[in-house]
Length: 81
Image (cartoon, rainbow, N blue to C red; front, side, top):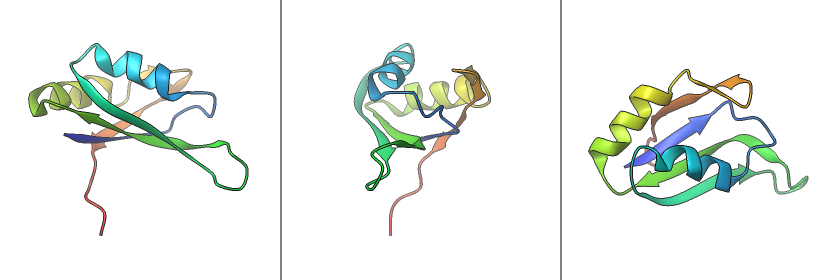
C-alpha cells in the first residue's frame, strides 16, 4: 500500500518517518519530497508498506495525530497520471 503523509514539519527526515511507520508493520520505502532549488522538505512524503492491512491501520491511527508539533494528514496515496 502506498501512503501519503502531509503536514510534516520541515525538520522531519525519512528515518524519523520510517521509525513511526514501522510500529504498524513492514515499511518497504520512505520518501520525503524535497524542493529541487532549496533542498528543503516540501512538508509531505510517501511511504510504501508491504501489507495493506498494516497500511490501513497506520492510516486510521496516524491521521490527525500530533507529530513534531503538527497534526499529520495520512491517507492512501492516489496513483500518478
